Length: 171
Image (cartoon, rainbow, N blue to C red; front, side, top):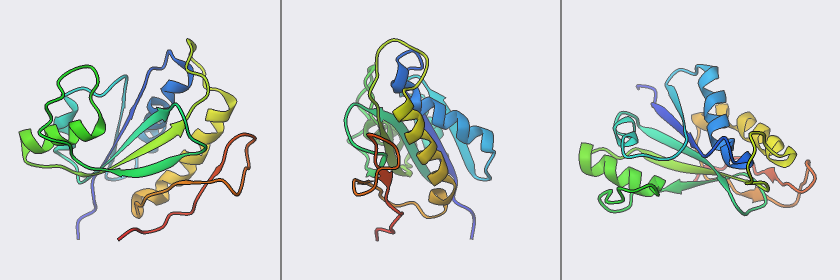
């Protein structure tokens, strides 16, 4: 059986503090040089990414969230025929574009990392630095058995943040 191919698309502005966490995670994953895993740090989602989506089996989108209590990963499904041709593409519309243009839509997830500072700046807040470390620790094993993850508010290893649940396989 052939190994599944992955694409990690981390997006957000590196000039808006915590908004850049998606790009930073994608850049870190690229440095790992994992077999079957390609990683693209992006300022924003663009129609050209539909080509890259058409070439892989699975994709993980990574973005900052304006609310939430911890890192979450949720499945994403294709939306329409990818008609959103503006500056506000979503993972779902991008998947739709891939299906419409290339007759292929990879299985997809969105990793959301709640931020606290979206003002001008190039660094991440201490809280998001911790959440980024949690996400990066999780990803190597998660690529082998992807599943939905939500925040576990019963444990708080970082002040003001929550830990990640252990992965569970959703059938």
